[in-house]
Figure (tube, rainbow, N blue to C red):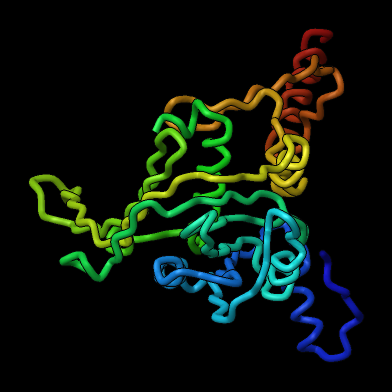
Length: 289
C-alpha cells in the first residue's frame, strides 16, 4: 500500500517529503512495534524490551490492532508508510499460536519478508544481576539471519571508540530455533595496548521457534538489494593494489616523434647555441685564409 503524495504547500512539508524520498545514501532504518488484537503479558514485555534495544530507531504502538499479517498485510504496510519504517515487529497470542512475534520488513511500501516465531523460553532482563552454521548452510535460516541483522542494525557512524561498544546481541541458529541473547561488554586492563573484553549476560534472553514464514522471491530480493549507480565501484583498468594497500598503475605510452621536439626554449641554451655557431663560423673563415 503506497500513500498518496501531493505537492507540498509549505517549506516544512517540502522538507518532510524530501526526507522520505529515495536517496543515494538512505536514512537509517526505523522499526515499528505493533500489538495484535490479543497479546499475552510475555509478548507485551518482549515488545517493550526490544523497543528499548532498538532506540532511537523504533516506534512502539500501544493500541491493539486486529491484524492477520499472513492473510492481509495491508495494515502493516500502511503503518510502515505512515511512520516511515521499513522494519516491523508484530506481537500476537492465540490458543493455536501462543506467544508469537512476527519480524518483517518492507520494500517500496510493500511487504518484502516476514517470519513468525513462537517464544518458547523468555527470561526478562530484570531477573539478571546486571542490567551457527545453519545461517550459512540452510537457505531459510540464511534469510532469517539476514532479516534479524537488518532489524537490529543501529545508526550508521563513521568512527566509534571502544568504550562506545556496550551491548552485543547474539543470534544462534538451531534446527527451527533462534536463540536470542544480549550481553554487556566490560573492558579490562591487559599487558598490551588492546584491552581484555569480558561479557556479562544482561537479558532479555529469548528462545524462538520458527512457525510460519513468507519470504520474498529471489528476483524481488535481488531487486531490493540493488544499489544506486552512484555507489557502485567501477573497475579501473591497469590499476592494482599490493598487500600493503598501495595503489599501483600501469601506463602505456606510445612511440614519440623526437624530430618535432622543441629544444631551444631557454635563453641560456639559445645564447650558448648562438656562441657555438659564431665560433664555428670564425674557425671556418680562418681556415679559408
